[in-house]
Image 1 (spheres, rainbow, N blue to C red):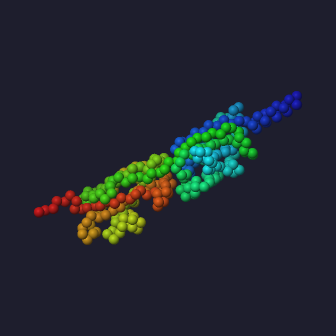
Image 2: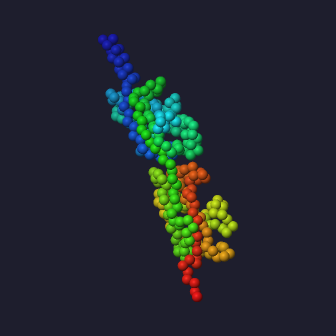
Image 3: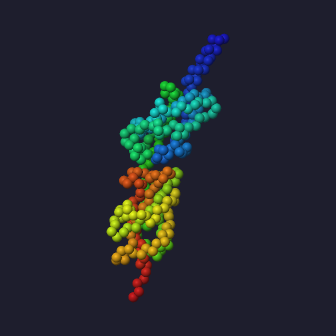
Length: 290
């Protein structure tokens, strides 16, 4: 009888040790460009773990990111990866913060450089593969689950109104000036913040000098919306000797949920849209007496 018990115990230990894990991976096809955002948003990635016989042993998750041709460009250091405790009561649900901790990931080549500089992978198609493994020797405990995803190129807003070199009626502009622009593409969740700035261009300045040197007349942040109505309460009295219209430049800086530039690949690293010049003319629409 003791021998039978010993065999049963040994068989149980064998089954538990080699218990197979069934996993299901759900991944957004176009996740946030900023990898740090993955861990903050549970809807980006979900890994569901369950055992074939209802029991799940302790396990780690082997994670690899590769290009569409199968070249591995990033992986989680398994030696330092967390151990997840198995259970026999239902599913174990993990998210990006659990299986893709950035502090444990290693990237190579241009992908490492891009992440260090911008926090993002270059725009391209990628494959994410996750696989449960034994904590001690990393032996596979289940099949590898892979999903493709796309990192889109960020297109900054295009300034629409006032359009380039538009001359605004000074009398109307004293009351309100409407600014409109296109949204950032792809649209981000949570919604992007748009920082609108307007600078006056002095007679001795170039537009770029005004943008870089002057204090903004308007510096306003709006979240999600792509329009702002400014009530300037300015006289717009001509500052030029020839009474020509006053000259202004405006731009939109797009910020992420942490208040950082949404992209750092626009040349300046500030995620600023191409600036536009407009004029305010107090004499526009005024009839000249004979």
